[in-house]
Length: 395
Image (cartoon, rainbow, N blue to C red; front, side, top):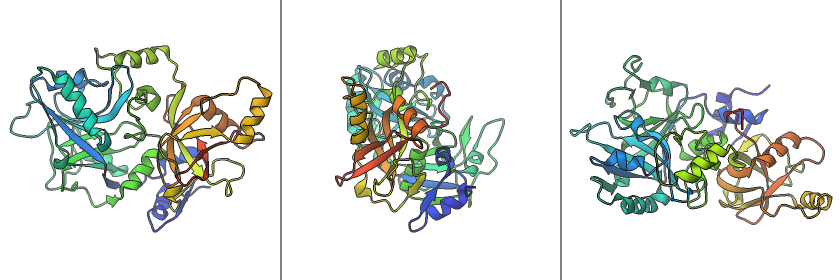
C-alpha cells in the first residue's frame, strides 16, 4: 500500500529524499495534496495594448481572443511561423485593472529565451494596426499557485470568493483573490492558478499556503506531462499538436485564419499524431539493470547527469541489433524520441507513441523494450516513458 501523497511531499521538500510510487499514474497527483505556491523564473512579459490589440492577437496565435477580450482570466496559446512550427508557447492575460479599463491591454507571458523572437515577430506583423508593443518583463513576476485551497481563491458573480485576503485585488465577472491578472491553469487536472504580479510583490494567500522553489513547480509540471518553455517547444521545430496543445486547451479549431493555421488544422483533421511529449523517468543502468520504470523521483540525482534538450532517445544497442536481424532492411533510422526539459531524474520527451505503448506493455516481461540516452556527462541513462492518464482515451 502506497503512502499518502502529502506525506511523500514532506520528505521530498526536505534536504534530499526519494519519492516512491506504486504505479506511474500516481506521479501525476504526487504533489497535489498540500497548498503551495512558487515564483517562476525565466519568464518574460510583453504588453500589447491599443484599439486593435485583440484583433491583432487573434490573427497572431492559435487560441480564441474573444474568450478573454472583455476581461477575466487569461488563456494558454502558441505563436507559430507561417509553416506551422512553434515560435513559443505563451499565456495571454487581459489586464483587468487601471483607469483606462476596458481600454484593451493584454500581457503575453513567454519563456524569456523566446522573448526577443516574439517581439520581432509581433512588430513585423503590426503594420498599421493601432496598438503598442513593449517589453514589460521588468514590471512583472510570474507565480504558480496550487493545492486543494487554490480553488477557493476563484469565484464568480454567482459564486463569490470564499475568502479574500486583505490587500488583494478583485475584478468584475470571474474573480481571483490573489491577483488581478491571472488564469486558471487548465493544461492538466489540478494544475492550479497562474498569477502575474508587480515584480517585487508576492501573492497574498491564506496561511495554509507554503512557498516552494521553482524546481518543485517544475517537477510537478513534468510529472503531470505538461510541456512549457523553449526546452519543450523548440522554435521552428515543434508542432503544436505534438506538444499536446490540443489536449491542454491551447488551440481553438473553429476560429478564423491565423499565422501557421494550415498545418495545425490539417494535422487535427487527419486525426493522426504519431509523436507527443510524454513524461519520463531517468535511471542509471548499474542501478536498474532491467530497464523497467523505477517508479521513484530522486531529488539527489545529479543534474550533471541529465541530458541536454533535444538529445536522441534510442533503443538499447543489443536490442536494436536483434530487431534489425529479425527484420532486415527495416531498421528505423529516426530515433524513437528526443529529450526535453528535466529536473532531478524526471523529464519530458517527444516520443513516438507506438514506442511508448510497447514500453508500457512489455516493460516487466521478457524481451522488454528499453530506451536510453546520453547525459551531459557522457554517461548512459535509461529512459522510462508513459502516457498521462488525463489524455483523451482515443489517443
